[in-house]
Length: 55
Image (cartoon, rainbow, N blue to C red; front, side):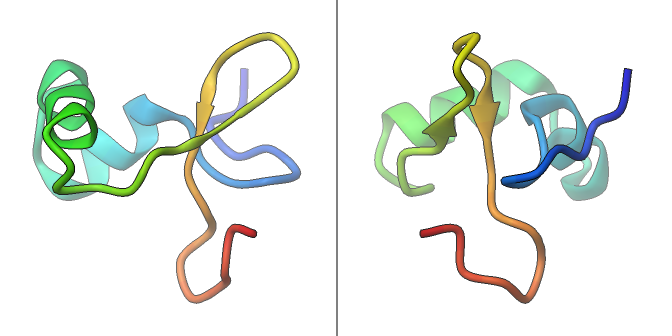
């Protein structure tokens, strides 16, 4: 399954690129360090593509 969808990237892809674990990325979102991610219809977090606004 691709880590990139029509609205952005999933948590695992962001974590790999940043050198964090998936849980660390979720914690950063929970703590307000990262803005809340959009959600796909199936509930996955979807972060904006690099260089493109996600909204």
